Image 1 (cartoon, helix red, strand yellow):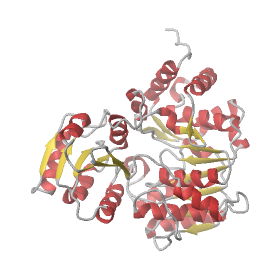
Image 2 (cartoon, helix red, strand yellow):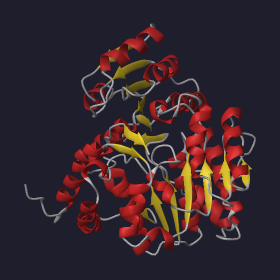
Image 3 (cartoon, helix red, strand yellow):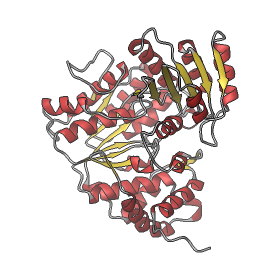
Image 4 (spheres, helix red, strand yellow):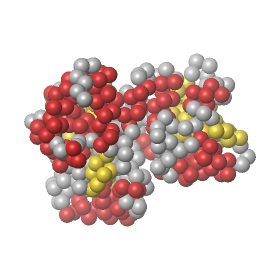
Length: 431
């Protein structure tokens, strides 16, 4: 069958969907080979490489905002996207255009013929190289570069950054990264390079010991930012105490790199005040006064952070919680963490083949807090409509669900089908 020509955004997306059949992959060979075929664009760029379990995206957003305030042309590479695939590749917070995606895919697709059928690049590997090529073409002064899964064998790890940042270590993706914090830390610490400074906010002692050992072995200067660090008298535009720690981690990184990439106190203040990172404790106020809080608390540590934020920022208020999660997450633990805070719970399926069912979610919430009404609902739109007269709603769980909420609230119009590009299958190997 003849391959369709990449002539429109729709055909570009169709090509990316087709790559999902190759699943996810642990290993750097494919990405290195593809990058070489397009001229090794990473050699022309400067990076800050960010790994960790939670807070990666927020930390990337804060770094980007500060360095953009300092007058740099800043590339931002993150995943997954909430609504539009274009969110993954941005320059100065402008999403890559549909036309650029079409062009890049049309240029890269012929190169894939040089790979064998049983070693075909995955979607994430292709997108990683697309981003490198685009950022080099855009002559970015700096790229804020988020890992996908893990770090050591993640496709993003072909770069040599100015600094490696590890936000924290918690249990997530245990099927692939390991079932202890020390094992997960070893994967995340794989982004540490010889002689390149490392900054971390990891507080778990076992995980921190692994990072310290890796830093010593690679002669990489290590800065450890703990919960006692706080940003001084600064207005951070993101809600939540945990964001103050992310900001402190960011400021420590800026300080470490001050000689290479100067940022003044005014740049830092302006950057902190102007950070925008949707779907993470994002508060929406509707014209009728209703408040909707969107937060992608997709693992147990994220749920605990959300609970702390609700208790501090909305003390005494019991929200209606609308919840959906992927089956491969620790959703029973997340449900039990959030159940005591709710006035009522509506559980929904996530628009993914990997979704946990609304009924099984409802059963856990109901058992954890028998005093409240818990209802399994067929979809998010129905849940939002059923809650239209409630004063305060929290939509949480999967980032897929948060992306859908942004669309339904009219805050991020895009082709709903693009969320399906976040789908992936387990890694084939650990090459």
